[in-house]
Each structure stands twice: as structure tokens, then as C-alpha cells.
Image (cartoon, rainbow, N blue to C red; front, top):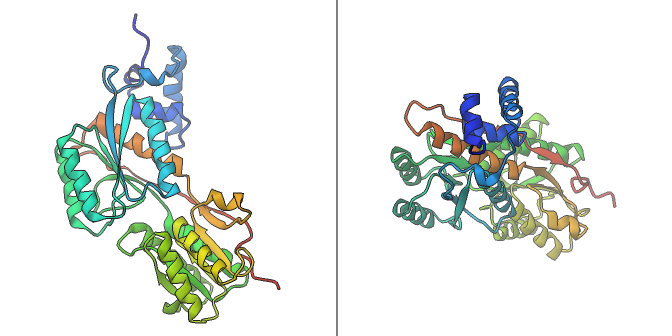
Length: 343
């Protein structure tokens, strides 16, 4: 008699393979009654999860394609970790494309995919205002290839996706600076043609409004989620002598650029300038420069993205399917860098 597989558990429980995986991994996305039903079937059948027995086909590893804008960014590296860990449970391998925040490279990656077999696509689009990228992804779904978005969106999106509540995260970050006594707070914003860029700037604006602080356009620095933009924009800000006492940086790489500029100008971090960033930078803790930051469950984002993709593999990509869009909460981690300089 063949050993029980994850597909058998799904069939008996009358749920998808992805739902069984979520139960096995303790995902909070499963309803209590569904979790109880699946767990009962697992116990009754003495099922022991085996990654090699969870494939979506007959033991042959199949691939999913992951398209990301900057794999050197630790955030995306953690997302890939979550995707890969979840994919292994289903006997899936991952093929990774790095678009380097370049729409042409993204278009090339999507064209290449059409020439090779893939079970599905997980993508963080370079821009959510480019209709061409969205059209290419829509063509994929019409061909029966599932698509899941991570972190960024597409115009009028009907794709499944996993995102972060950027507005809340940014607002709490700026709240922390205001509560520490800052009133002249600059923001190194991300590109306005991306969901995170727009939403984090909106959170900054909300925090100022809620505390009765007039927004000064001179303090809104336009970055591009790269280190160099954080560096050059911070140097420009400091040269203008606007009396800024704190900076909110909208992603981890720009935060590194901000720190580089501040240190070059002899401004201590933390201490000389209030600073809060979006996303954790573990290397700073090692260097003794802990930064208050907005943390995201990055590995979980990857796991959920792959789980949503498997759901589509099971259910199909037809027009009548239920679109699943998951928004996860961030968490503000206070490490003291938001405080005013007491000297």
C-alpha cells in the first residue's frame, strides 16, 4: 500500500493541498474549523509530512519562476527564503530572475518564461504604473499560468498577492519621531510609481497631520529604493540647513545611504540625528548601530506567496476564481535612534 501523501490528506479533508500545507506549518490564515478538520484527518491516518512526498506531480520536481527587482536587497533575499522553503514541501523548484529595477529586464524575463515550462510566477513588479507589465502577466493567466504578486501591485490588479500595511508602518515610524520631540522631520521617499513608495509617503503625511505639523515639501526627498539615492538626497538636505532633526527613510538600502551621508558629515548615528527606517538591517546591530525600524514578516510573505500560487494551481486561473490578497501587519521595533540628541 502506498504511503499517505499531502494530496490524499487534502482529498479526504475536502480542502486544497495548499490549505493542508498551511495547517502543517501553523499558518494563521486557516480558519479554526478547517484547521481542526485537517488535523483530525492527519491524526486518523498517522500522516507524517515528507517534503519529497508532497510534490504536485508524480515525484518529478517542477519549477516556479520568481521575478524580483533587487536580489541584493536583504528584504527580497528573505522573501526568497520563504518561497523556497514552502516550494520544497510541494516538490517544486524555484527559478530566480533579478530585474535590477529595470522595466526592460522585467519584460525580457517575462518573454523568456513563455519559452520555458513553469508552473507559476511570483513577481514583485518594477513599477505598478506600467500597463505593459500588467498586460504580460494577464496573458500568462489566460494561458493557465498562475501569477502572485509580492509587496508591489499592478494597475487595476486582479492577481493574488501578499502585501504589507505600509501606511500604518510609516505612520507609526513617524509617530515615534514626533513623540521623541522632533518637529522638523524629513522623509527619504520611494518611487511614486510603486505601492510601497506611495503608501509610505502617505503614512508620513498622516502622522504629521495627526500631530498638527505642517508638511514642508522641501523635506520630502525623492529616492528610488537604492542606497545612492538615500546618500545623495541626505547630503543635499544637510547642505540646505533647514533645521531638520530627524529623518524617516522608506527602505533599508536608502537607510544605509542616509547613514553614510550623516557619518561623512560628522553626525553620529544614533545620537546626532533622529532616524527611523523601514525594514530591518541586521548588520547595523552587529556594528553597534541599532536603528529603530519598521519590521516586516519577510519569510512569511514568501511562504504565503507560494501557498497562494499552489492554490491557483489546484483551482485554476479562470475568471470566476476568488482573488486572494493578503495584507500583513508590520511592527515598529524601537532601538533608540528616534530619540532627540540630549547634548
